[in-house]
Image (tube, rainbow, N blue to C red; front, side, top):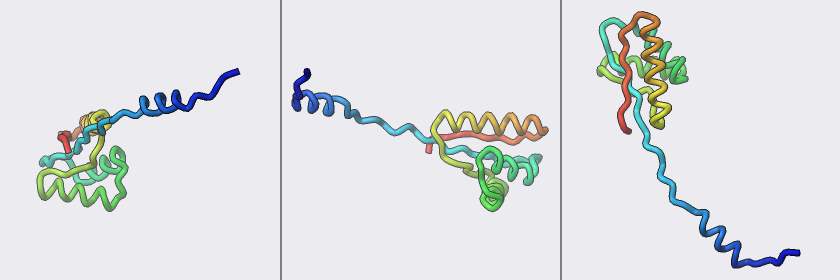
Length: 104
């Protein structure tokens, strides 16, 4: 029925390789304020960023002492979603907690 042509296979295989750029990554940051409780920050870190209690506490202390803390590094879409989730939960609970993202 069909004949085997190894030359065709070479053409197909070499034509499918492309150089794909890695997606840009973004740091998601929490910012210190005078009103958001430490307990709420730890809760956000556990719920939104899936940090262990120990990791969440360490990041919260960085936010408290340095004014800012890195929650994680994500692709743009994931980082944007996490920032929106933090703002939504903070507003819902009456806190002015700010979250931002910047290129890693």
